[in-house]
Image (cartoon, rainbow, N blue to C red; front, top):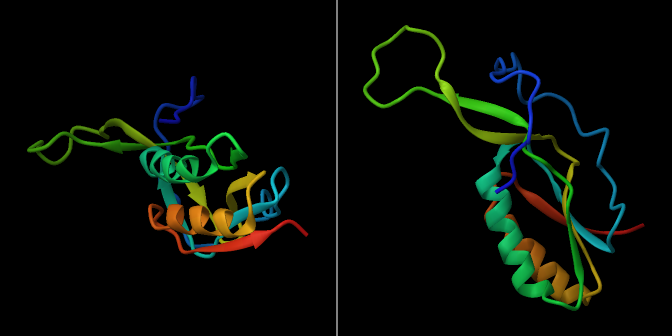
Length: 137
């Protein structure tokens, strides 16, 4: 699973308004020929990214190449089970990536459009965002 080697702050505050704005960066297919773009807001965890990567890899095999365009750098904390209220914030539990509408999540190249569409749309079922298949312009 993906996680940062080093973080500046171990615990982050939650955003005041999460569902705000559209992607201004990573919003075009840059490396591959085909990709999937998020159409909704969400936090995508490193486990979900890994699960989607496995689905795409099954189709790409050795014929093509795949790029993951998102990286989980936001720590999410969780308090232990049956811990009383208070006593501070919990320990970092996992890492997520904040995804806005228009963000390119995965890209593939070197395989046919039908295979790319099938693999990317199947990987979209593993993610908490609605996705759309796109081609390089």
